[in-house]
Image (cartoon, rainbow, N blue to C red; front, side, top):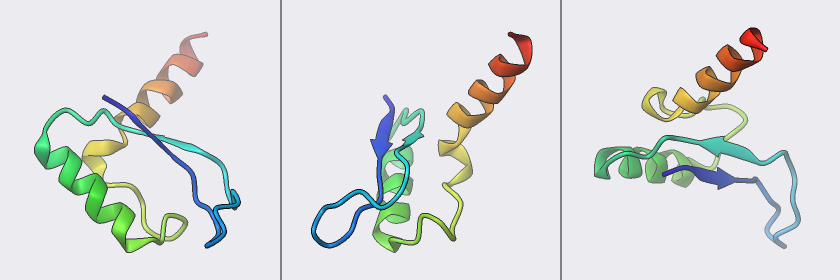
Length: 65
């Protein structure tokens, strides 16, 4: 499973780009995502390592194309 998250203002107006997170393969990954989101500092704190595999996949596929 993947998550798509986007930072927004208190009025729910988008304030940054959407970001794919995942894969979310188990309850530990889901808890890591929850904890990261609760911090609310997406721009300052990187996504937990187990949830950034999607970013590595897209970088690698871009190099092959």
